[in-house]
Length: 366
Ligand SMILES: Cc1cc2nc3c(=O)[nH]c(=O)nc-3n(C[C@H](O)[C@H](O)[C@H](O)COP(=O)(O)OP(=O)(O)OC[C@H]3O[C@@H](n4cnc5c(N)ncnc54)[C@H](O)[C@@H]3O)c2cc1C
Image 1 (cartoon, rainbow, N blue to C red):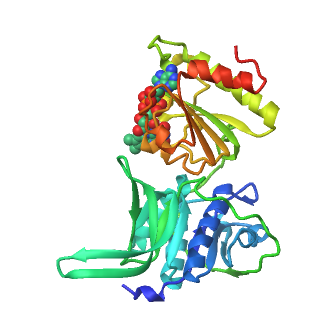
Image 2: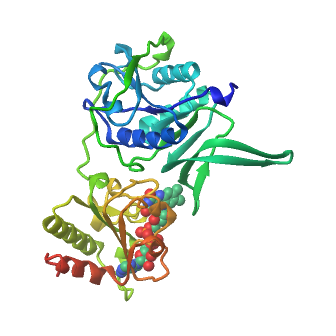
Image 3: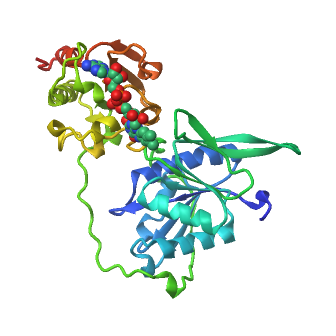
């Protein structure tokens, strides 16, 4: 392995959709900026694809100092093997200190393949990045690795973990969408764009792409909502333990969302816990769908107000809402973990409280 000191700069794999950088790309560029500034390093946007000329400076406007563009008709459609080939070759030759991907279908696949090819590690599903010294205790003594990335991610159980890869470079992670706030787009930011010529062996193109079709876009925009009203399994019964029709709770949440939109004029959405979505409740079919899931395996959100109604606050849910400015919890159980992070906690029945909130905002809660 090369000396770690040879490795410099924080790279971001940039994704493009409909001629623009995707929102998660701009978020990861902001996360990269945070650690690069601590280290006195540059942020480098990596663009791979075809016809990238128009988009080449965009990563700079969102915080990069340099963009490396690999533009070829052979790379028009995303394919794991040739893209892995291009990125691994760049990593081996240019030696980045860190390489960040988005935790989505492409980023998860590509990051893992590049990490394997370049013999380094990969921390998946990170929600934050810090720069810290890593202290390793061994029978031979204690060794301190200065200035490593602490890659913060939810643990498998109940805690938050920090992953370090102190002996290998680049330090690689994929970052959950919603984990950072993009820097404002600024066309006055200076930076350089350099071209990268990849020689990709023909055998890398094991797949022929015949046609590409876009999936229908979801109309549920949890990441952009300023207010989110989320429901959990608490919708099944009222405070007296009487079974209730969960659709009733959903309709209250809808009315509340509408009252917020009318009164405050801000984007408002309905979210849900995973437990509620995976319960496949007949009455909620087509309404409480996967796109509404908040949490570790759903979406990471950062609204101004997050209302959790009938949600216990398991760690896998909490990691998705930690960046909310204000969390309001409604729960019948005063010991529910959600109250540990709520700014405002109401011990009570969501079947009473949601209609009251609608009334308060001037809607019709009854
Ligand atoms: C690998 C992994 C990934 C996961 N990813 C996610 C994820 O992305 N998102 C997620 O949400 N979960 C996720 N989970 C599941 C998570 O661990 C919890 O099981 C889930 O969040 C619980 O959902 P809940 O709060 O709706 O249900 P419960 O834990 O059953 O909580 C229901 C709450 O409602 C309250 N309540 C009951 N009746 C009322 C009433 N009438 N009014 C008000 N309150 C009431 C109860 O006191 C209770 O606190 C994941 C788990 C694993 C293992």
